[in-house]
Length: 405
Image (cartoon, rainbow, N blue to C red):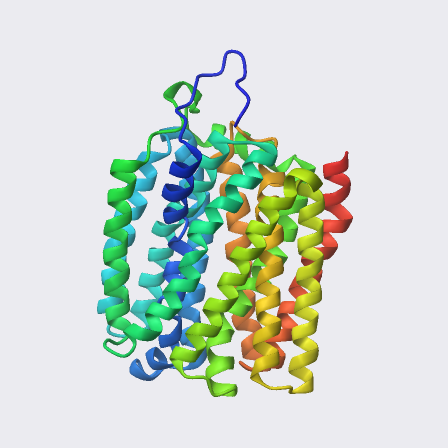
């Protein structure tokens, strides 16, 4: 738990299980927005008469919205409290999911997906700020790992459910399901989530305060170092997310149902990694577990590249991708813990900047890589390996000395 500071207003406390369940459900915005219709991407492209690249761009548009929206939702939660911006974001997400379902062409779908991401960003960034309101240090790392135990089930369930829903509905129906999920999450916020940032702890608002908070966060060497590593990790992850459907189905011949099972196995591996982190972080500390996870992620991405170049077949490729997700889950919660360590009073702003770094660069660079090299296993592997290398270099050269100092 966060240590009380003399003169600081007391904050309502949620029990560990309560926080894990409620925040874990809300953190599922990103995975649900992407993974539920992932098996339908080839069908979406055919339905709208567009290219594979533009179909992938519907994911990029949402991810860019998720990244940019955090820069608004995070600071607003520092000013107005956590609940109000969260409820507004969830409600608008539900409405925009219906707009996606009704989009008559790819251009309007791209716009609706971007706006949907802007709204859904509130769930991601404010949940991280709420966790920082309640916990710190090793306890925060353990809580973030527990949150992933809940939110991480979304990437497992969503593509499997999406693959089965593909039997009875098209991609438009999937977005209708997303709208219903948004309504359910709105009810969760309204009835199960207390306000964790009391009025006395909020800032007065305005651009000057926002600049002050942002400047304080960006002057933290440790935060900036984790930010750079997170950008590399985000590029690697989004490349996996956006290309895997086309690579595994079109290049390796998997059906939507088989692909959804392979993707779910990767998501399950990520959960295993996060829970392994929870078990060892008390002994080894967030920094050592973070460095181990990010180094192992690079090794797994390199293995994927070797197997893709060797053309060993789908089993080897899927195994390498599962290893990549396992290692990513090991390092992730500890990177967030290190980044937020000095920013309890600015948790919303710090979470927003960190989330922007993770969500923004991948959706821009992954389609560029696909446009240059094509949507194939080698292009996917090269991009993931290069991005994982950037993350590992940033972690060892900048995060490690900043945390040690």
